[in-house]
Image 1: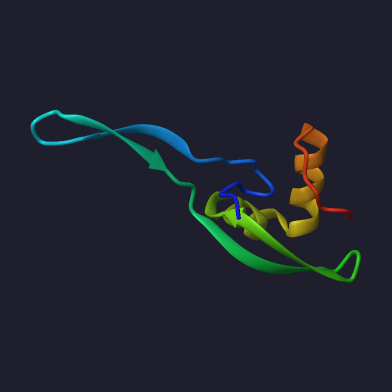
Image 2: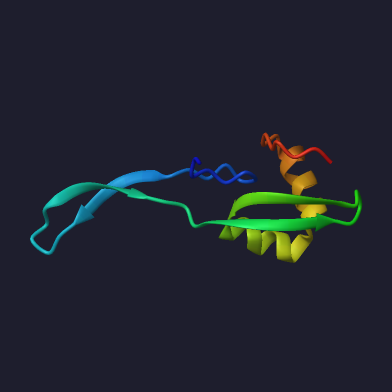
Length: 82
């Protein structure tokens, strides 16, 4: 399973781990993804998403239906059918 948020499109980023002696080694910064099940009252369906915690915070604020509509209006490709 890929480490990509289904709503925001967040992906792993690469960078350096810097030691005390300033030696740099490659590392990956993984997004904090959670598997979460949502009920959409407007459609009466349950959906399971793998989303980042930032998206989860926004969903708690706006609601799942409004958040998905907002992401689709921005042009972000979400594979969720409403």
